[in-house]
Image 1 (cartoon, helix red, strand yellow):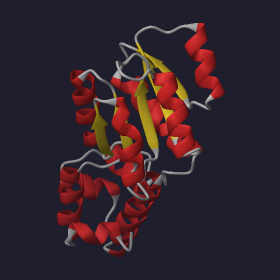
Image 2 (tube, rainbow, N blue to C red):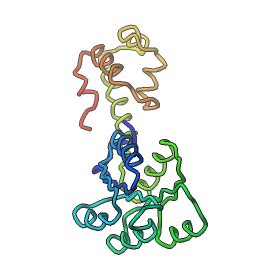
Image 3 (tube, rainbow, N blue to C red):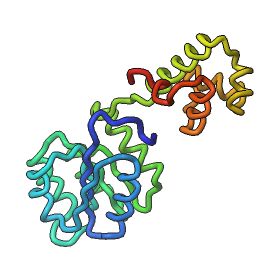
Image 4 (spheres, rainbow, N blue to C red):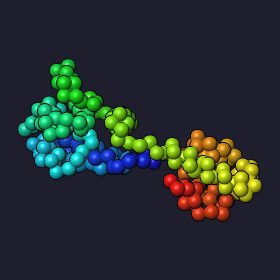
Length: 204
């Protein structure tokens, strides 16, 4: 469950004249559960923003037809609240200063790591209140339901461990919401408790 459960799917706009970069970002961001639109021609961005709502714009600085900084001005005229992440292979004080003036949320140097990019998007989303971190809540609900079902059947953790072939330590961590259980572990637990796996999720 990478990145938590989204309150509403986060819409990201990627603007880079390099199609490989767009494809790379689209692949891993879509995999993380985001809705991704990519544009290779910066002159098409304003039209795209008029047609749909975006939460985050990821903009390359060095592009033909329109520089990233000029595009930033157009984006801000269109939407003064959208979060903007600047991508650049050629960082400079001038572009960093211009980025700050246009209220840019992050300035990422190419090449970048997926983890770095992921962390930046999660930080922006949290700051703007775009993501509800329901993952922790879900773990607590599952843990509480497993514990209640286990106790109602007078089963100890040791007995559950024998039935599920999962360690007492892991079962204890799942019940205390200190560890997220895999689907296969939850299936074993549900079978041991003689319930459907969906019952572990309760009303979530």
